[in-house]
Amino acid sequence: MKLPAEEFLRRYLQHVLPEGFHKVRYFGLWSPTNRKELRAVQEQLATGQREEQQPAPVATTGRMCPCCGKGVMVVIEVLPRRARSPPGGTALQLVGRKQ
Image (cartoon, rainbow, N blue to C red; front, side, top):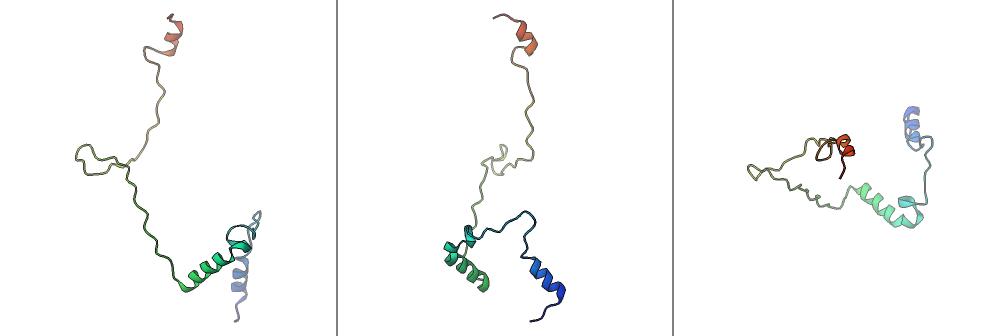
C-alpha cells in the first residue's frame, strides 16, 4: 500500500506524544499482565460487537412542585448567603454590652 507523504506523516505523528508526556507500558491496559483483556477489547472493536449496557437510572432530586405536586423543580441558580449581624444588634453594639 502506498501513501502520499502527507498522509504517512499524519499517521506517524499520531503516535508521537506531546512534550512532557511519557507512555507507560507497564500499567493499566498496556500492562503485560492484561494481554487477555486487551486482546478481548481489540477483538470487540474490530468486529463492532459491543456488550449491551443498561442505561443509567435517572436520579431525581425529589423536589416536587409545591403547587401542583406533579412537576419536578429544577435548580437554576443558588444565591450565596450574605453575612448577617448577630441577633440582637450589630457586632459593635454587642462588644460594649455587659452580660
